[in-house]
Length: 460
Image (cartoon, rainbow, N blue to C red; front, side, top):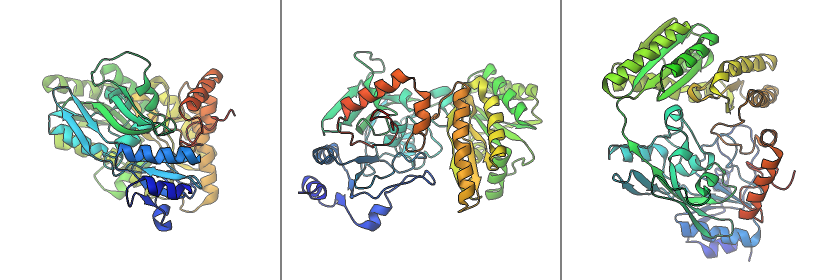
């Protein structure tokens, strides 16, 4: 019995799909220009039992398995492998429980981030991680990449909100790790190990997350910077004035792209816009917003304004959330993801500008300035392969610059299929050995998402 026959026998009717047209739509995620293979089959799991059965078959046949959520990833982490299985969790989309007293939610991995946020809101609670793709990205994918978002500066990344996991290991065994309680330090932190492992150690089938009290309506401050040095000083000034719930940067290229696509009166002459938000209640929020404005003016901002209502606050953030789709209107894009210590943001922006100019590519720099995580986005004419080659070179040079400034090659998108060489450079040699040891212990036959996240897993 071959692997497809074995899968079909082990799983419910309709769970195993081999139609070429259906397979084609599950070959890759949203990372542009990253190679993807053709799988033997796509398995549509609807339960932990389905995932376990699929992995038992794959383990017995030594067939690679690529776990997949909503396919919104930006690093090729969900790209298919020739002759492998794509295991999609998109049908596992139930919110199993929201417990307001304990402040937790228990969800399946296919639940969309914003669906969970909306459900929590009905209980007066708040799920903090909010990637820009929150309208369509799934919780399982957020866990796999340790996704961040706009609110990380105050509320942390996905790992900071995950309390417990159910995980199916490579051989089909079901593992439960973590605690429902807010505190729990017994044993090694296996939850932290699986969060951010990009499907290379196990397949997450249930997530218990921390919910917080719903914050007060936000006040958003927008500062107009005449140059990027002023923007950098304003970022530092805002952080000195207090902890914002959000602190975002959009450079001129980004602002002009958004304004051209969805006109909303943005200042397209500005070198950059800085968006700072406070969600402190009442007078404390008003005072913090004034402090943010004052910090931006002191840094040299030529104009500042702020929202007066929650609706205005949301409207001001719309420009930031529209940034990537607006840039896609200009041509093919390649989105980078690099994080540095906050004090190095200005130096990183300068390096990004120099790298783009030297490689003759257009770059739009935007991102989460409050935690040092920027997303320089290279824009090329559609189908221009020489330009794409230059952009790929610039992409890697930006990551190298981030490492040189004491940072990391990924803040939230993951290593996936495109950053393995640079991850190798980032990790200490002993850390690389430990990564290999852990991978071999949990996935001894190497079937889980091979070639992703840990390209040196075989000893390179």
